[in-house]
Length: 292
Image (cartoon, rainbow, N blue to C red; front, side):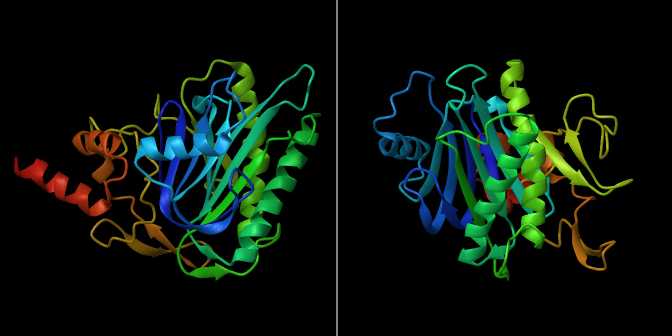
């Protein structure tokens, strides 16, 4: 999975099996999932055409699963919990009609699921959204809310209920992300998306990451770029860049703490300009930079 965002659109790229409750929803294979911001006065008459237009402008053709929202993309919350990554935009009016707004949730798993588990993921995400909204004293959602559940790789999960490995992570991420996304939208002051990672360092908790004023800088070398501190290729499984290590739960985890590829300023710039560039291309680009 790779993801990037423009001022108006979040694009999630990969080789997905996806289930969607959104526009032209259903279950199918896709290479692109996106969430696009439309103007507040946008007409809702032809949402399918708007989805097709955004996909065509991005050069992704018709092989897409798209969502629409009036929430500006800088309000986006990205939450990573092990093999689960959740993307949330949320907006809801405080004054009548209270139900007006949109809460869009995209769940991506780097571990494969059955189709039934993908549908169960949508159910778990929706339940968690309602639980979060009730906790805020709000309506449980809006008439235009949508959820996408997607996965990559060989099937490892037959089930995704709230006590299964995927479901537990999805529930925790949505419970954390929906209030954060609403807070960001209602503050009206944010300028860039937020990133949260579930950490087990000194106790399990969510950590909000920011490239600004990081207390660990420089963790690799002076002058490093931190745009991709949490690498969009993780886990790349490229043993020239990292290695498998034993985890605290007696499993195996991909350890790339020694990799500095995306921290090289020229490489970081290249990724920003070419967000679909594969890892092999970036390695070749870096080698050329070193020779030059």
